[in-house]
Image (cartoon, rainbow over all chains, first blue to last red; front, side, top):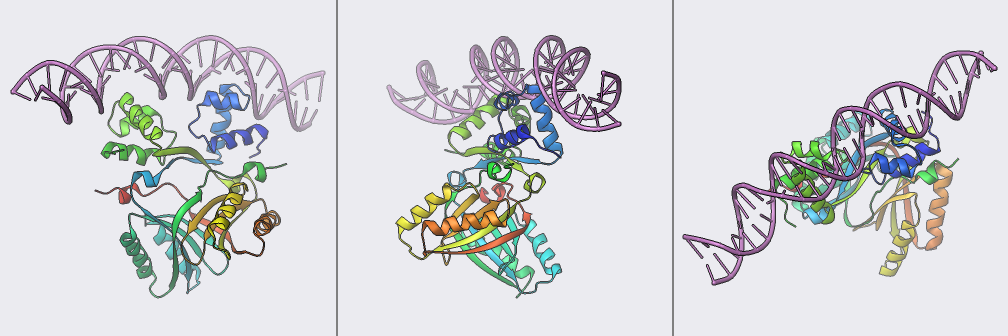
Length: 158
Length: 158
DNA sequence: AACAATACCGAATTTTATTTTGAGAACTGC
DNA sequence: GCAGTTCTCAAAATAAAATTCGGTATTGTT
């Protein structure tokens, strides 16, 4: 799919203001509402635009603990990897998982109500692949810069 | 602010379907549209609901490199911390930053067009606090579980 | 230049958001 | 216990927005 300047502007606006009305969006990118809607629909069905999320302020909601965990599997077979990844997807508290290259295999972000519950989750992970997981936990003290979208200006320069 | 069962359901729906219409949301949580809208407005102005984001499929948009970097500051003064954090906020490619406890001080997520640009960003970070930053880069091979909201069921159980 | 394909605009229609209103429940203070 | 107050919610009315559609312009191709 080929994106022009207007598409990029649409993405860059929607990325940060997902609930903007189509009219307002159209005005921002200098299009009529109907054309604008066409483009958004096209971007959605092409999968360029994925889900729309509302970011919640977790501290305001409840007490919670966020931990970033580094993981290395001692058995580096691709089967172990798939098993581990599949297990992660079943644990709702594991809210994010990246496979990386280097000394670690995974970075996880885990959100739990408290440390007791966090430990239970970690135990569950160890049980899954016994004696083969190397894990290190890092409690998040402050989210200095929360994710608010990709730097499209820097990425799509042409 | 006190949240009841309905508020929690609203949050849990909005978190994953931010562009749902107010009518549909009202139907989901068994409320009239006006009452539902009142609650959403209240949650927004209380700051419980933050920004609404559209998740973009970056690989479909352009070639890019995502790196998770661990950072330790050799000078652990609070001033160094603030300087470093402030610097990060000025770099658009640093899309996320968490302050953590333990052997590392920060986890960064950095998105760049390619490795050359990534290195330039890292250099910039080193220049800011010369000789005092310990950094380790981990290229993301696959985003196994992208962030899609918090596990409210697990966090808000009562 | 002629053609096909695509994209745009603006008006009409449908759907949705928002405001207003009033009825009922919960809470307060006498 | 019982007015008076406040709060919440639902229903209806109004305002705004989304969506559709026909016609026109634009772009790219031969």
